[in-house]
Image (cartoon, rainbow, N blue to C red; front, top):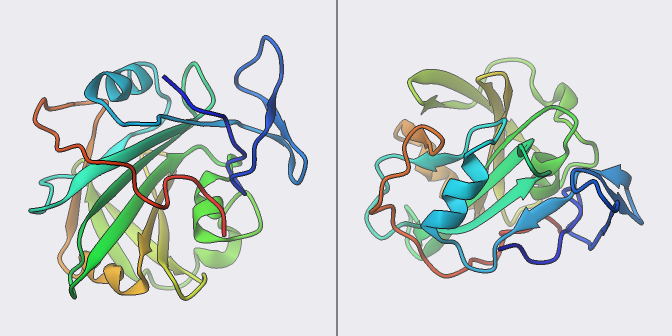
Length: 207
């Protein structure tokens, strides 16, 4: 079900410790939680990953017209400590857009990898007034804008005791947050008509 495992912080291939699929070694970042991913997303793969996951698997609900889930990645197994859901569809200002939603336990480094931050956690990024918010399974989750490269927009907050990241390409896709986005945890409900699409460009972290 999975392709080559990679580092959650840079997307480079890692060496998984024999007999322990929850730990791996990256030649750049040292000991990391390996990030697994599917070559093609499928409902049964989502169900398998979320069955014992320790963090939510977020998707927009409802899904906007033309949008679909295009990728799935998770950190550590069994019992994923991080889950990445990649979505793609029409951009608010025209063209196409990609939205990566990450839920992760502190110290995993997955969200920072997508946002282009150097550390495993957002640190001082979360300070002062929030920039936006989403409805995460009925819980208001304030989000703070993350300084990142000019090809994307990134936001981070907390929901249900773990980090919540939204990273969008291009930067103008941040307009997706202009109207309050509602998120569904696929651990609670994986509906059979969840739209699925072909792989998108930014499923794995990196520059």
